[in-house]
Image (cartoon, rainbow, N blue to C red; front, side, top):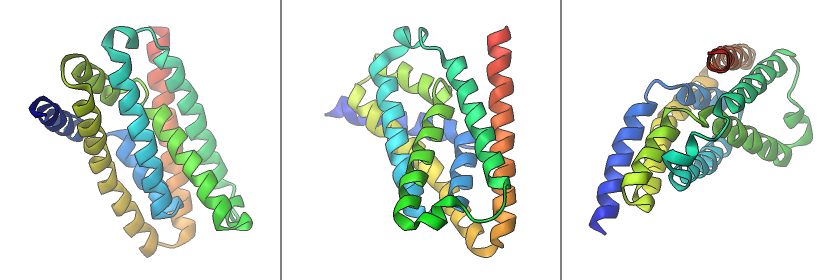
Length: 195
C-alpha cells in the first residue's frame, strides 16, 4: 500500500507540473467555451484515464515502437478542422439536434482530441517512465488525477469566460485557438517526421 501511495504522489506531482502551461490546458479552456461543463469534465476524465492507463501499461520500451509523430499529425489535421468548422458561423449542428446530440458529439470531440493531442507527449512519456519503475496502479491513479487537476483549472477559467463574453467572440477566439494548436502540432509532427 505504501508503494502505491508513493507512486501516486510522485506521478501526481510530476504530471501536474508537467501539464501547467501545456497545450492540453489550452484545449481544455477552449472546450469549456464550446461545450457544457459536465461534457468537458467527463471527456477529460475518459481521455486522461485512458491515456495514462495506456502509458503505464505499454511501458517505455514498447512506447518507442508507436508512430507518435503520425498520430500527432492526425491530431493537427483534426484541430485545424475543428477551427475551420467553428469559423463557419451560424449555429452549431449540436444546437439544432438538441442537448442529447450535443452531449454525444461534444463528449466524442473532447475525448478524441485530448487523447490524440497528448499521445506521445511528455505526459505519456512521464507516465511510461514512472510506470516501468513504480507501482503501476499508483502511477495511473496519481497521473490521472494530476493531469485532470491541471486541466480542470483551465476548464473552469474557460467556463467563466464563456459566461461573460458574447457567444460570437467566444466562437471566433476558440476557433482561432484550435487553428493555432493544429498548426503547432502540425509543425511539431512534420519537423519530427522530416528529421
